[in-house]
Length: 381
Ligand SMILES: *Cc1c(COP(=O)(O)O)cnc(C)c1O
Image (tube, rainbow, N blue to C red):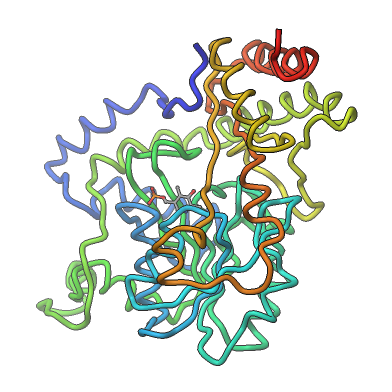
């Protein structure tokens, strides 16, 4: 059986967790959080990063930092995970969903400007599969209308756009370290603060609305309640799990990108025969191999292929049910313009197994079974 995902394990986790215990500090912002935070700030050249308990929480912090008030509008794709928009809905925002581009499955940058109203406050690009949105265009629009850009880069760590790391381009960026992502601490996330104006308040919001971070640095002699906030900092035990992955970050990235390329090469022939479509990566983008997907004809063909692969020992998955089609999505959002691609493309997409350590021979087996499926006319005997 080839699993769809296997959480990343480097082998050094237990030693690191032991040392967190020996340091007698397992709550947040200890040695491991400090080491990992400076690693991110240096590696990605970010003004300030803050570890969070999830990407969802990094997004919630972003909504708080952007001062979202009831009735404010946020522009986002409908083809995304619920957390992208839930975080803003919690602050009272109305979500204006915009169609995606069928080639990258990312928000269509050419529609964003038309969807802006007087109430728009934030543009929320999601870098699907670790392939960047058209950030040049998005940043230009944001500047013109004085909007914030919050990047949902949950899937985008180590990917680049015009040589800039994803998550470092907008005012704020959010990473996920959930076990389904390229780098993991079980549950966890990171808020990347590229806009200095947010730093002080972000520390306060993350520390229950207190200036405790300043107190620990000796900048104030007592800490008190200074703003609204919550508890968004992860335990040292979780960050200790992540630490060894950062030490071999290039190896992990190389491994996943290699798997991605191996899939691509082995499935090219089927694309040439117009039986499937393969992912598209614009010239400005460097990928991290987060997801490898194919697109088939329609939802029925996808069901048959999922089944065919399953009986051959290969687990595949699909996502997302477009948010605007859900009951809650209708309540808290509206779709701007036509849904030309969001629904249609979401029904054609199939994600193939992808994780650190997936073997080339396994990829060759998977792609041979996909080829066989189409040779047998959709797996019929
Ligand atoms: C995984 C994911 C999230 C949520 O990440 P958590 O760390 O589980 O909260 C948000 N947005 C996107 C696009 C994701 O893929």
